[in-house]
Structures are given as C-alpha cells and as structure tokens.
Length: 228
Image 1 (spheres, rainbow, N blue to C red):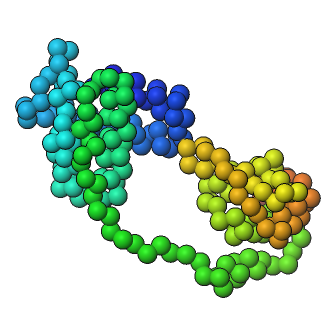
Image 2: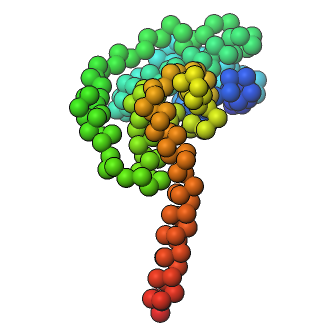
C-alpha cells in the first residue's frame, strides 16, 4: 500500500500544489490507515503477491472499521471527518489512475459535527482594538496598518501575514490574497486601511533602526555587566 501512498504524495506536490501543512496531514492520515489495514489482514482482507494487502480488497467496511476504531479511541468528530476526507481523495486518485474499480470511502457517511457558534468581535470591540495610542513610531504604525487591513478586507490572519507590498494596488484599492492551497483571490480594501499602510511604509525603515538600537543597548549592557 505504501507505493500507492508515495504516488499520491507526488500527485499532491506536483499537480495539486497543496500547502506543506495540508500535505503533512494527508500523509499522516494515510499512514494511520495503512497501519490499521496491515493489522487487520485476518479480518477478511487478502494479501497481494507482494505480501501486502491488495488495495482492491479494501472496501467501505474496511473504511468504516477504521473510523469506528478512531471513535472508540475518543478522537474528535472533526478529526475523524478530516481523515475520511483524506481517504476519499486518496481513493479517488487511485480510481482515476485505474488502480481500483470503485472508491470505497465515497459511500461512507461523514460524522455529524457539533454545531458551534463562532466567536467574533463586535463592532465596538473592533473599534476599541484599533484605537491605538496616537504615536508615529514605526512599530505602532505597523500594528495599525495590520489591524486596519484585517478589519477592512476580512481576510484570515495567515493571509494577512503573507501579504507583500506588491500585492497591494493602491490606485484601484485591491489586494491580491493567497489563501488555502496557495490559491489567489482579489479583495477590495478601504481607503482608511490604504492610508494606514502608506503611513507605515513611509516609516518602516525606522523599525530596523529601532531593532538595531535595542540590540546595541543590550550588547552595551552585557559588556558593562558581565556575568562572571
């Protein structure tokens, strides 16, 4: 079975171009399923000539048995659902490549998720958060630019962190955002956020000066106050 996982791993990297985080999750989930299958050779699964489990012998009962084991071990429904999704994608790939005739994970139901009310900032909370001290130093301007952009665009924190200068079109008021799976999309950004970003960019060089100054002060203190 490992040879099929290796082929699928190459497919994820080359064709799907998934993020490193997604890639690791897929491989981890499939390795767990592989070990489960290897430990259940005597449960109706026939080995291939190589001594491994014949991939064609895996059916929906095998998949359900795997998910049932995870449930008995107390794994969260959200984690079980993610592992099932990984199996569906894996077997879909194998079916497309002609290794199997049907996708054994396709007919397996996804565990019902507990409904949770998402936490969010109220309008007052958001405005309070952006009421930073009226300072003009580089670090304060950076934080204000980040908060204004976050509030104006509604993008994820991870997407905000990944923004570069070239991603922002100040004339059109549009931002190129890289989301999950490295997919790009264009989102509008408000004038207040653009102004905050410009103020920060004009002052950004000050950050490096502040950091260098702080490091210099630390070295000076250490020289004047040796530990020994």
